Image: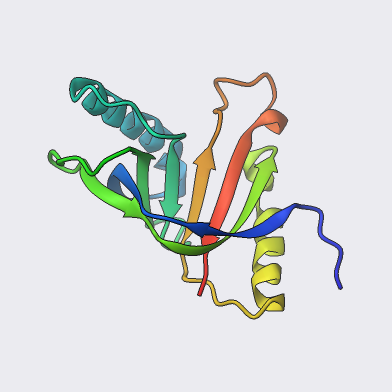
Length: 156
């Protein structure tokens, strides 16, 4: 068996409501869009007197770097009403191949490669989307090597 550099596991994702925005963005505009969207969602949640139920995430539905189809949001305890493009949604339920990654976002390809190899090796089929859950941000850490991101790939 091939040796892996990352701790990859399979876990079950249960029903998890979220408040999110789904949109299209180029990769170059994504960091600013993510920051602005997180701020909008946090303001909306504060107005509703609701706290996030966990760290923020981005779900990537494709890999077209000029037209990324992304969902940006926060998990919440209960399904909430939407407002404009802020919509109630949920994290896909079912099996996930999951890995906690510590390091620079720009070096995440190696983790994705190993996770996809794991999926193939174990006979799973990827559903074609990827969640990145951000436990901190570049503004929170001294070095990009200290960024903590959980990557989750829904599988069948």
